[in-house]
Length: 221
Image (tube, rainbow, N blue to C red; front, side, top):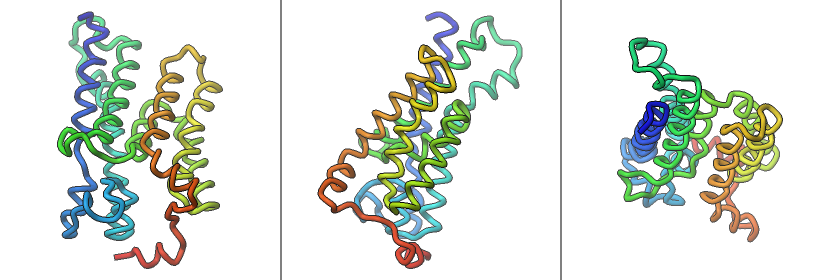
């Protein structure tokens, strides 16, 4: 395998393993809860917040964001620390593709965890971390989009879906549509809609749960 492809391949595998660590399961278990059997059964920050309280849910969200940051950021850190590396390993293209495959691997690992029989969360929080290191403009736009739609609808799912849809739009405006970052954003948006398909069905039926201010206060531990 050419040197410029080897680093992205390694980053993808490492990213998947990092993403497979389910902090939702770990944190909920510390509170005496099997998150796979509680609430919606989804091992994500939103379900932990509903079942265990605001603080545990925020901890899970922060740790999942960190997963995305580490998975997408370690190739760049390694290139900065180690200079005596065979030519081609840390070329600009190799680094960019390594960051993107690490990001994609983390999202896949989070949603189809090796340690949870290929079950997992919905990929939003780990995507935030990956965007932080690889596509900051997309992160800023999607973050404001998420906040706006969350506080106007109080639906986490609606906010997540609209924020995901904003990614390829921002990428197309910021980079050339032939840039791999644009295609990654399309892939992430499609993937988020796929993982939220049950939420979309509940929204269409008017059965989706929303967070109210009163509920948020009751969720505090």
